[in-house]
Image (tube, rainbow, N blue to C red):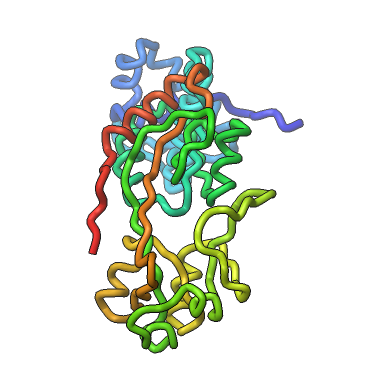
Length: 299
């Protein structure tokens, strides 16, 4: 096993000598004798076999190698401080990692202000955002695989706070056969290729959405579905916020279906284990609710 030749204290002393402009100033700031600092830096250079400082006049100046080593040493000491802070937070029951399951239909732009607000208060906790779809989001909630979840429905036995409404529209390429019809019968729709977003569950339960087309292609992301549509391949139900610009630019076109031109779903914030919430999860939950927008702009 590798044993370090140097100590963190030696690197901290070198940083102090540079930051405070010399041995005397660093000694005052660290409440140590100047001779002890001289000895520590000299020993550090000897152990490394590299000259880090050179005295020019009465001032200690970093060598070219010293500049590189000093910069890397700051990363080292910062990492140790972060590690110790993380240990303290764990001792205070602050979670080292918070898992947030987010249904693909929820607009990610709504999360960015939340994460920006959370970062300064995160105490080193990692955020893991887990993209889920339909039953996959159910699984994350029911199996307690997430600390918080944003879902387009509330599973039985759980409670949720509404965050926003998401409108879905049926779209295709302007040159698609379906786009030429003023109103499409559901039976006619079933004769064409449907692009569907894959359920992220290991055991998907395809009970949601219109899935009557026998000819279906499955993709894992909305962006892939949109790429197919813009190449005149199939039709798909997509969130309006994802295709609003493409509709305005006439790169995609809404399909008018008798009995269902659009559908609206509500995104809910759900805490699968509310009695076991840690302080980090509670803070993230609070911030998500503070930044929620019940109504998203529609066309």
